[in-house]
Length: 316
Image 1: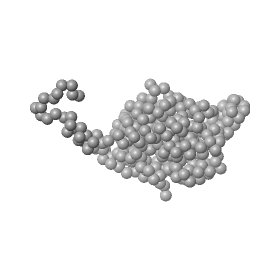
Image 2 (image 1 turned 90 degrees about the vertical axis):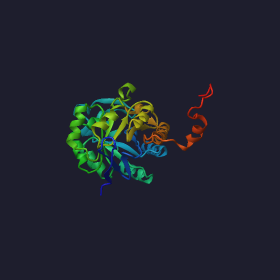
Image 3 (image 1 turned 180 degrees about the vertical axis):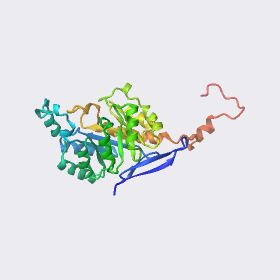
Image 4 (image 1 turned 45 degrees about the horizontal axis):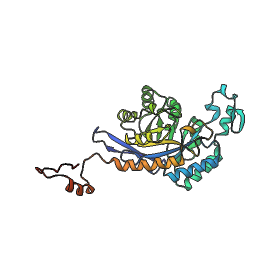
């Protein structure tokens, strides 16, 4: 039985049903707390111990899930790049050897699955090829993630859809037309859409956070979120204020570590601040209905002058 489902509430402005999608035991979307995804990706650099430390950091910070990446190197690396020799922290090696060096296999993911279950932390992965989908499916993930680079790979997206699990679709490096064509091809049921800009790190002027609201208007039946690659935390908080129902940030133990994603990642202390402030923002947004709160009553009585009363000069 697949742990996924949809539910819906009626949006008072549009009159449309705005669904929530269940990822494991959590609802994501309209009326639900923001779902925080800590992406480990390949920032573990092939080290299971580093991955475990990042999982522990995600638990400490209060993240809702961690995400990895899964590739079959021979299917994801163009053949003409296999034999290119490059310098790595593990010595000089060909690019295909390097891709295998940082890729987790069955033994590592079995241990990751055990470790996350022990800590009651869901995990899932971005799959970059069909074989990887079959591999990850054995672990019964709560959902799949399609990286921005895969947005136009319809056969891969349909492979993930065939599992019946929810799919998170990132939209970086894509035109509005490409996004629309892909969503038309794969359907909106059980689909979550993440605004993203695929620069690592991304300058603030390229984040275009108002796209979150554009996507909410264009795809009102899909929970809309944000996958951020910026340096710093403020834009991710802004994304929540603009209506992102889930957020994803790469995490790392040290931004100076080897790897192309490290510079755009958040260290564990930053992840703790990120989650804490997201929860504060959620509590402070309210429902948009004006009311007088109990804590205002004493000030109202003391400071508001009676009708017709002349207020003493100097009062603010």
